[in-house]
Length: 618
Image 1 (spheres, rainbow, N blue to C red):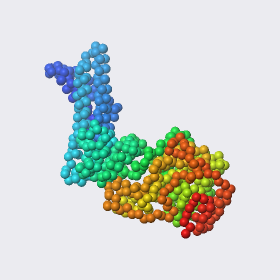
Image 2 (cartoon, rainbow, N blue to C red):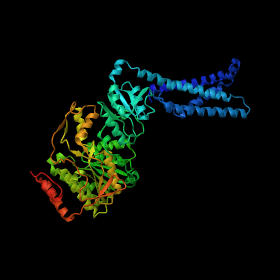
Image 3 (cartoon, rainbow, N blue to C red):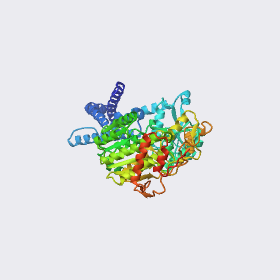
Image 4 (cartoon, rainbow, N blue to C red):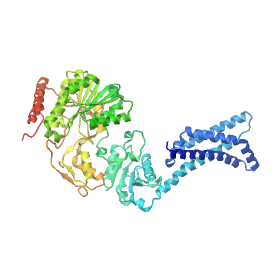
């Protein structure tokens, strides 16, 4: 605790002790108009007043009233003070009654009531008087200081919105200031909340932004459904304001909202469905007290896997990655946030069969999540041999070792690009799925694959690129105006992977019902709007043409696979495809040789294995 804080606390303690003693005396004065009687009571009971003042302070310490910041005292703190005062009244009441029963002369019950009211009043004067005084001081900003601040409209006049608004008001160093609320609760419209007007409902956002010269909109409804969020953001898009949002309550770790948690609105907030819900008990059942390994554990998917796995009480979490910086970062993050979880980061390539053998032999993992892969479609088009070496034979190494060392579950991270692939990356992932399904037929290990679409915010995804282009003033580049993609958030993707592990019996390809696909052009347009700019006016959208191997649309399931449902209505299972395992592994041996011989015609050998792979032979 700092010296200045110690000094302030000492002053508050002195104030309270003195105010309690004065409250005792004032209570006697109110009940005894004759000065002689009043003086005799003070002389007779001053010792009781001194002891009572100390006991009163002890009660405040027990109820942690001295931890209340004078700057942020609110109704919650008033309730605590009231409860503490009630305890003090009870102590006085019991003491007075006990004294009477024993025949001793003590103060009256009326005195105890007066003392409780007056001492509570003195307590509130300090706490809420300071709050009101500083609040008024903050609100009376100089004209220039006020003009320099961004004018903010807050959507949602509930508890979260009030906390955010107070923080803006009380912190002069911030460059934002709350001008008004909007809320669909008609009982709030037309009233003031902490001095801020509630001007209307959600539908009035565009008009209010124009009339009040709003610069930014903060959406402060932490529990808003996807449908409600879409409605709010669509109204916000009718303005030229930058839009920000607080995360959902499930994402707020300590349950407390603060201005520091407010972030820009992202396309993930506009997905046309509710977030994936998983059965945490099922996940806990196969991860708790198990040795779990995540290959590619430093990547965008791998690191989120590590975060969620670490919260499910593994015996040991092994983060395996070839890139040391990523592995180190996620290892340190988890050790800081979850110090009780045993974690180890290993630097290794899944291509190195001997190293992978050594890791499996030494640590004997029970569950393996295989996320290590080259995923960038254009890069793999120019380096197809590397895609095969890393994706196909890296997967084969991990699959073989999982079988050899009796891993319980092996979960492959796959992609919608594996369906009727038109690029090397997608075709390599389809071969990985075939490896997993072939081993599932002969191994005691439960081998499965999890297939999903594009992940918002992952390394190399389109969202970070668009954001950077917007920050640089544009243009925002889109390959085709009609190109569409399925999207999901990284936590959703990882939830699906974890849930698949619970459902795994071997050979399944799990597929997520991802709702309606999103037009990439619309995605770029909305991101520009939500950043406070006008598309094709402030920031241009430039059509660049399809890249090598890029589809106009992605498919989630091959026609011959079929679908069956799981307990989670958004997760389906694709039926294993029949294939000749002996022929497949002969083809893999040839593919391995051609890849490491640096054959320039890799696409031909890939197409011999993946019959649905179509590529340009020019």
